[in-house]
Image (cartoon, rainbow, N blue to C red; front, side, top):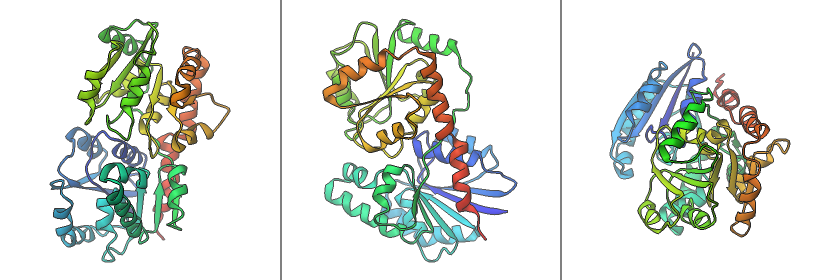
Length: 365
């Protein structure tokens, strides 16, 4: 039996946790013994219990969200990890990478990068500090057996610095996969939206990097009477956005743990994000049969370039937003398009496809 330890900051309904959860779900528990170590005391217990129910041991270290406190106990954490005698340690995030990069841990080390680190760190920490953190992260990753980027786009950046880098695109599956016209109708009724209206939806953080304010501004004043935009999520700019919107057809939902139900009620997933790793929200939207209307950035274009035989939506710039929105609206309701988005996701972005690709790096001789 191969013992794998996954280290992650915390377990929530966010993208990295969803990817980890789906990876664990598909591993043969008769062949792999799994331990998940979380560092920071921000776990969502519903997520913890869901993973634990799969026979996975979860160790919660419960540090406050201060890097200095975690690093001060680095040797103690390393000693605890060594006490489990792992064959493989798989890290998610820079904090756990700082711990696991220690030479005192002798097993195979793998790390998944869930973002575009130069762009993300710049937005999170500022230009100069962000660049510094990016290079620190890369220096630590040089000690790892394999560094796995979540998209080909981020891999093309990292490969210049790390010869052991590769990429495996994120893959997830929504547990309740049955189509339900009741869910679609119920959500629309709850929101006061006609059953024949076209609904666009964004789900994610409301922050500068995601350019949600620019997205909302493009829709505000550019919607027909039968069009609606749903904004699901929370963040630092939510309050200012809500106060600036004039169109009553733009609806702020706040954070929704059952976001798949709102996807099922919608027709098109939209994002004007400036930077992405490989968005889990896009994968969920495809599984629910939505078309995509996405900003012209490398990771979004990568999705469209995987297989041109499937029509899954449009890439847009601010200058052609109205025309691209019109194009995709004309495709809404086409049963072939709805089927194509699901088939595309199942073929390229399912959790089974992702897990199969990870398995070869877990095989310890």
